[in-house]
Image 1 (cartoon, rainbow, N blue to C red):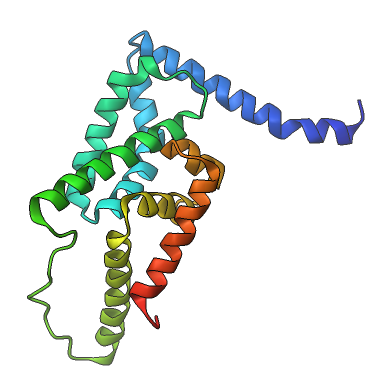
Image 2 (image 1 turned 180 degrees about the horizontal axis):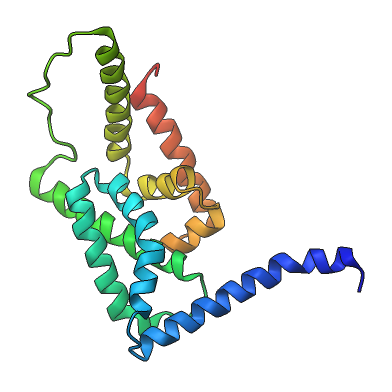
Length: 197
């Protein structure tokens, strides 16, 4: 075998080795081995927290939801068949929990974001620049929060988390074309909501 053929095979070998290690870790969890689920939590919780936080907009709620996601993952781990990567499966759980939370919150309050009534005035130019940057970020977060649930989830997974459309489709249980369409619609809606920014 030539060296170019060996090099061409390495990425697939790395993927299959990673999937085999992942399957072994899941099997250790299923057997109730101490520390196995903790390892899953340690590996996946930072990215899942980031996703959930961006979806719900509140770190305290995101932390609560993250715990719920991992409780659900622990309960449902026997149903994980390994057809997708464990991280993709966990993203789907996290996305679904976040969307359920947002629907519930919207139904309870009739609004998605909280008003900001008590903003202090910032006196100097440096503080003003920081404030403007913060306001722009908050405007973006509010605009993202106004997206329909499907568009928001696809946008966050693709444009923020960097997943490919194939992975987004897998995580959300939709077609790849639907993922592309949802992301496109989200971008158009964000442009309209943010105006000239």
